[in-house]
Length: 122
Length: 122
DNA sequence: CCGAATCCATTACGATACTG
DNA sequence: CAGTATCGTAATGGATTCGG
Image (cartoon, rainbow over all chains, first blue to last red):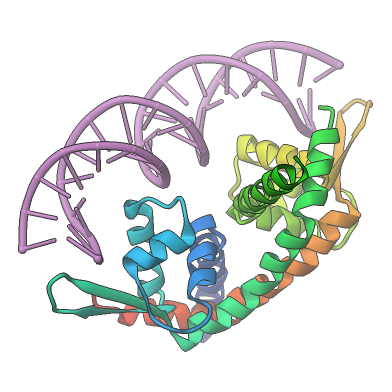
């Protein structure tokens, strides 16, 4: 049965990669990671400002997903008013570095893509 | 008016970066770019197999968007049966390289993330 | 045959209001 | 302050149909 088990694991891995890519390759996820990339903990409200244009619902969902994936830690300080902050884990920081390439590319090529977009005749 | 114009351009650039990121940071977009990364033209149907699990509708939409952004070229061969293929442009190939980091990270860390995910108690 | 356009059910999203 | 709940709208996928 070892052979069958191995195949099963391989199949699951392909699925895992696909699913993880779908979660990571997300607009809000990338923006949140960018906002946390310096490594220091950031509060929810500060994060919402920093990301810009994200609804509470989506920010909460994105952060919960990142927390669940072990990419972000969530700390709740039981004070009034409430204080919750988020910080990249080591795994999260490594993702931040991997994501850097896309970020740089987008910033470098946004103008060129926009130009192509305007010139495009469909 | 130069100052105001410059500010307007700067504002638009920030918007352009955000919008482009939203289009690029998309599950299907990344998978399509991955499938085209070797540089050779690929047919629609082959692309659909290669990506796996994408509907015709979403694949068409993704390809049109990539074409519009100048990242992919679309060639129609007027033969029967029809033959349409897609190929990365130079800009598209540069994006492919930038995206490579995420792809490598996901493949390298999918198992670790899944482990964290299973161990997570929310 | 291949790829695009259309209809329909499901889901995701954004804005608002409300709670601890 | 940091969420949760709700609701209307938009995006998505599947099945089907159309066009060349």
